[in-house]
Each structure stands twice: as C-alpha cells, then as structure tokens.
Amino acid sequence: MIPFNKPFLTGKETTYIKEAVESGKISGDGIFTKRCHAFFEEKYGFKKVLLTTSCTDALEMAAILINTQPGDEIIAPSYTFVSTVNAFVLRGAKIVFADSGKDSPNIDVNSIEALITPRTKAIVPVHYAGIACDMDVIMDIAHRHNLYVIEDAAQSIDAYYKGRPLGSIGHMSAFSFHETKNIIAGEGGMLVINDPAFIQRAEIIREKGTNRSAFSEEKSTNMVGSILALPFFRQKLSLPFCMHN
Ligand SMILES: Cc1ncc(COP(=O)(O)O)c(C=O)c1O
Image 1 (tube, rainbow, N blue to C red):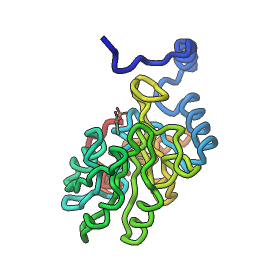
Image 2: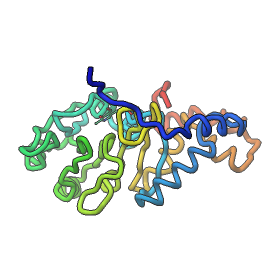
Image 3: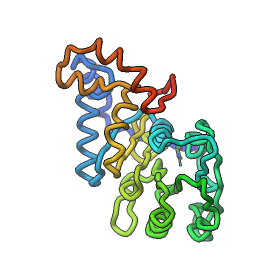
Image 4: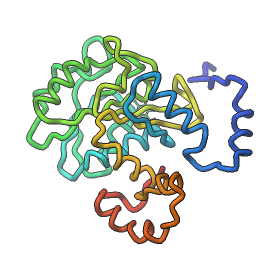
C-alpha cells in the first residue's frame, strides 16, 4: 500500500499544545494564532492574515465578503477540489467552468475572457499543486472587467509567480493547512486579504458577526450593547445564521 500522504511532525507538537492549554486560553486568537498571523504577514508581505479552521472556511468567507448573490457568475477551473466552488454555489452563484491549459491542470487563461458576461462577479484561479497560474493575464482581465480575483492557494504555501508569493496577488486568497498539504495543522486554513477594503468586515464575519476580539482587547464592558447590535451586524454583513468557523 502506498499512502496518499504521511503527516510531517517536527516532534514539538505536544509541547506547543501543552503550552496553549496551560496558557488558560484555548479558543482562537491566542498566542499561537497571533504568532502565525505575524509570521505570514512578515514573511510573505500579505496585507492581512486571518487563520481559519480550513481553506474551505476561508473560501466561504471570501464568497460572503464579495457579497455573492443568486445569479452571480463565478469563473473557476474545471480541475479542482469541490471547496473551490462550493463556497459560491451555496450562495446561489452559477459556476462557469473554464478549461485547463495545455501544460498543467490550471485554468487556461486564454479561455477566460470569452466566458465573461454582465453577471460575472469573480475569477477564482487555483494554483494546483503550487504551480502558479498566469496571474498577470488574470489580473489584467479582472481590472478591465471590474471583477474580483480570489486565489485558491490551498496547495501553494511558499510558491511564487515571477518572484511574488502566490496568494499575495488577488483581492483575497485562501490557504489550507490540512494534513495533506505542505505545512500542516491537522485541519486548518488561512484567509489572506490583499485589498484593505475587506479587512474590517472580514474580522467581524470571522467572529460570527461580532466585534468580540476588539472588545476583549479593549477590555470593554459593553457586552450588552454588542449583543443588542448583533441582528444589525448580521443584516449589514449579509451573514448566514450559522457559519462554521
Ligand atoms: C484546491 C483546493 N482548494 C480547497 C481545498 C480545501 O482545503 P481544506 O481541506 O483546508 O478545507 C483543498 C483541499 O484539498 C484543495 O486542494
């Protein structure tokens, strides 16, 4: 039997888990989350990093952030993992599949423009196995047609396009730390936001429609106010009532 993958362990995992448990804070955004955010922002120059529980969650956040609506069209490659498109299908979008190029399973950038209609909202290129899509061509098309670009960079940590880290080029990108990927956390993911216009809303969406993290940092006692404001936030942000994060 040839296993599909073998998780790589450094030997320090249980030490860090013990440290996290002993820190007394075991929900998200503790010391390790903060270290990861800083590491990825500094090493790859990502504008804003938010760890998520999976790449699937990061893609769902991106779909919500661009306000995906029934009838929107999303251009995606035919060859990918289901999560790439599920995030948009769940919000009623129609997926317009582009064919693969001749040299790799990646999207054939020359086929994209013919697929654009007035309903097209975004292009979601996938850098399959860390092989870069031709991002210059994709970004040029997106700018000319006023479209969002969300890179599915699930398999692309530390991979580059013309010297630029994959995931740093589109408006947003999604990475995976699933056990089958290059850097692993069992399950895990990361939303990268390169367009600062999305940052504030992304933080609230990640906190299930609250600004809880800002409150705890400021040690605010105004919890009643935040609870009362919840329905307002949900409506404003077009949040689903149940989001797994
Ligand atoms: C291209 C692609 N996108 C998204 C995902 C989803 O990643 P996750 O398992 O972290 O949700 C995968 C996982 O294999 C993937 O290969």
